Length: 213
Length: 163
Image (cartoon, rainbow over all chains, first blue to last red; front, top):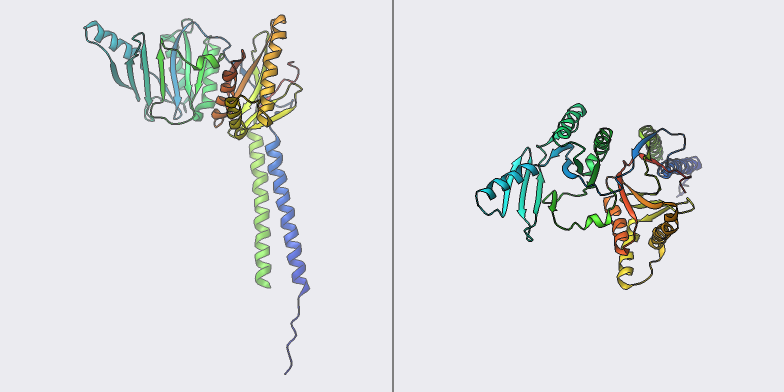
């Protein structure tokens, strides 16, 4: 009985090798493209540049107005309303330990500090509140209104900003600065139970580190 | 054999498509990229700009050479600080740079100048910026630290002539 002799097709082997080599070259090209993208960390000297003004290099002596930018929305915090309510209750002789308010998608909790010298403000922002940042004209109108109520010669604008609003914050910062306002900001990274919390007339540790805002 | 040839052919097509997509994505990003530049620097301030990313911090040493300190390299630093040891490695270089900025301030003050640090913070780089602030705070250095937001697609124009 004759054994059938198996023949190897060398043409197919050449196909395999050339295909593999071709794919390796393509992969190398992809790696070069991706690599060259990640290395471009600096702008070429001739590229158009957007001017970003230097951060505030001093602690403003003006009263601060706190605003928030989150969920692509601009929030005005009801600090004034809360203080008015505390003041009214205190005038009636009622001891005020804390109050809670809901205004325009912002929940505010104001407590008297243990030192009795000031107040602790806590705010929770809701996505359905505030003003959408999508309509820049509307935001500009709202900001003009805020600056009329809180004039830039008396107030400094402190804006708590979340990463989704970094770009919009810079536009708003420029808008305020062009109208003679001073702007500071507090970047926030993550979702916490309370979005913004600060005290009036209590030592603020952050101020010792961030000497410019 | 025909099956193998078909498979290899398909893989080649996939590789070509991937390459095309990568090139397109690069072009798209290149089109969207914009440069940003720090302006309105107060008289006498010498800004040292750092870019805080989720992966770490990009900075330039006093010779203007680009450096990168990974976020992960910053954690051992605080352990070394607790032990009272001199920080080494990548974090040590960053510490030396910040220290040099602080020490240079003494000389600069005679010319009414001072080094300041500007942290450009990418949307996901806040944790890194906080570490830098904590380093300055931990050492109690008299060094101003300012913060500005920067997009991931934005390229910072550094002024090489600032010093």
